[in-house]
Image: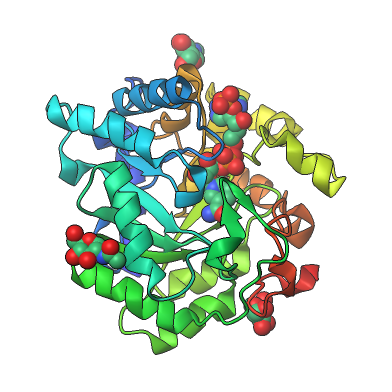
Length: 349
Ligand SMILES: NC(=O)c1ccc[n+]([C@@H]2O[C@H](COP(=O)([O-])OP(=O)(O)OC[C@H]3O[C@@H](n4cnc5c(N)ncnc54)[C@H](OP(=O)(O)O)[C@@H]3O)[C@@H](O)[C@H]2O)c1
Ligand SMILES: *[C@@H]1O[C@H](CO)[C@@H](O)[C@H](O)[C@H]1NC(C)=O
Ligand SMILES: *[C@@H]1O[C@H](CO)[C@@H](O)[C@H](O)[C@H]1NC(C)=O
Ligand SMILES: *[C@@H]1O[C@H](CO)[C@@H](O)[C@H](O)[C@H]1NC(C)=O
């Protein structure tokens, strides 16, 4: 990881020196993964965008703004729309397959080894691709396949037989077959990642976890850096659109973009609060996948390579971390997850 970090720092410093102009795909720093692939440090999140025109317009805006990395999942039920747009861009010669970085995820209802080729094939068909760049195990816990129907997971569907290593072997077979260039996990805790690192033939190249100003994940990020696992921050802006979350948790959603420190630093750099928040995470060597359906905000969220936060600004933002208290997603809304032996956040039980 040391070399990847150095590469990132050097690239960021170089890009910061080229001031002013709108970013292009080439301005977006990439992180070298243990698999040998390179992953753009800004990607487009697509969760909760299933309306055809909204997602197609967002993807067009993102590709035009220089995004090459797109994050989706089986459970987002939008892979077919992403496939439609990227195949159009590929056909028109506006982008090359090798420049795209497409991530999708094995669903919580596909957590048996034999499910892996089946769900990956379904994703590839919808995406109109013959490989994905990153295939992640979406959750460490599991429900039975029949527990999922039409976007809903029944609460009594828990499958407690989950064997991470056995599933991972099936993931490795997909990588060998060329259907997934890199492999990783999401929502796994440190022990669960370590278990794979210690026992698998191919270590996970990427861990995707909730990470934002109020939940900075310092310990697991350090662990991943030591072990050459790239970290992707999901909900990097604090998921301000997920209003339903405060309804089920009874907690108010944080408004990270109005925090006085953030607003003050943004004004100093003539940048928006969102750009400062994303830049802070990227400058920690972490990949971000902000979701937006608004062309202006999509453009804004990738335009973070023409400024650098100073050490004291970084320290000020580092200090806003609330640890576990700042966590938004406990995933208890996924039927029975907290009764599963691999539920990752035991401190929340
Ligand atoms: N692995 C997992 O379990 C998991 C869990 C959650 C999320 N994810 C991934 O991470 C992605 C991002 O997380 P997220 O969607 O939860 O939340 P997020 O990216 O933190 O926040 C998205 C929200 O912020 C708004 N927004 C975006 N850019 C903005 C800007 N520049 N200024 C002000 N508001 C802005 C968006 O509204 P507009 O659209 O109106 O701009 C949207 O409501 C997801 O889409 C998904 O791909 C993965
Ligand atoms: C997945 O697709 C590959 C290549 O098309 C095929 O060989 C394999 O049998 C498929 N597996 C399943 C479970 O559908
Ligand atoms: C501040 O940023 C805006 C939007 O990017 C730009 O139009 C404006 O020229 C900038 N102002 C200065 C003083 O750099
Ligand atoms: C990770 O989750 C497992 C399964 O619940 C648990 O046994 C372990 O203690 C957790 N590790 C950490 C570091 O939280």
